[in-house]
Image (cartoon, rainbow, N blue to C red):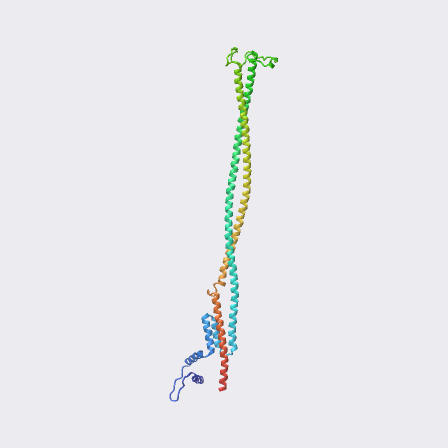
Length: 380
């Protein structure tokens, strides 16, 4: 140790004890600290180590820090051993970068594909919701139209029943009126015939030429229709023609009533039949409308159910897609305590650059060291 101190003191300027004036020897620890400090400043190898330590500090890399320690520990060894350590570190960082580049490429594709899927499913859900809304509106519209058609059919059935009942009553009343008119005409005709026969037999009414060849009418002595015996007085109000004329006028009125009733009956029947026919056509149209719209409504209801099922499935797929995007974030977005891919790549590039610089520095240092050893050996 004393010999080493003497040798090093010459190069470091540390004085030794002079005869008669003893100087206490310096502290070995202090001396080594000074030597190491001076060595770290002047030795290119230590500059390389310092460069690695600074790079490790900047990059917060424990691996690079450990490498700097290992390099410092092997500075007195062969260059190949130190160089291999640095090369391995460089290759490891380059491999990490390559893997991260591939991972980044996969993440970018996966996120892009998943985001596109999410947008597609969002759009599909919106389209399905809009289509379901349209179909539901059509179902409501069809329901209202079916109810209106069924109401019309019900009204037609009610009208036809009422009209049929009215027609039945009217037909019956007209038949009775016609029958009464016909019976009245028959009775009047018989009465007129009896009166004419009586008056002709009495000479009050001249007979027709063809009546002279017929047998006279035998009348009863006391006809039930006579209120008093015939006096034969020439009274205009009691003349045979006046009574017969009145009876014939009444018979004409009944005949007219019969004709008018028959005409009214025919008109009523025609109107009834036209109305029944028209309502039957309308009822058939509305019945067909109900059938068609009921089928269309059922089809749209089924479509709404199908669309709703598809929408539900799509919403489930969207939920899974969103969950997948959330799951991708830790691996593709929030990695390395939130550091971005660009920051990590830049930091790794700095590490590689520092390693290569240290590699060159050490290479030059080791070459210089060989020359120094050769010169020293020659001097000795």
